[in-house]
Length: 84
Image 1 (cartoon, rainbow, N blue to C red):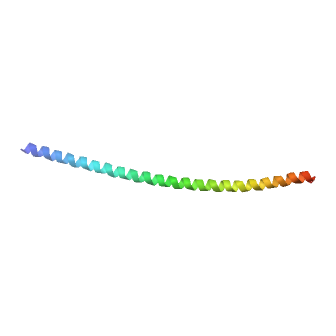
Image 2: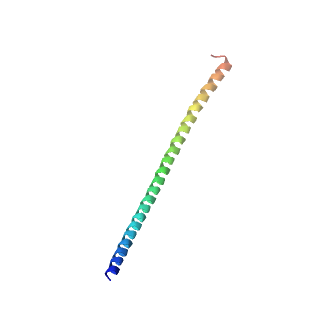
Image 3: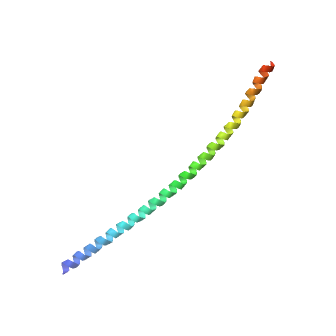
């Protein structure tokens, strides 16, 4: 009977360790999922910021090129009028 009690104690300890390990894995999985969600949100915000920055850049370039086009048109017209 002493052997049966020992066996049961060992099995009980193994069950406890298995449950502890399973709980640790569940916690680790939950933490990883939270990290993934956080990283996704961060990436989306960065992308949105980059889109806004590129949008602003292209609008500024449009203004610069429009001024350049106006200057070149004025120079071309002066050439047609015979002005240097």
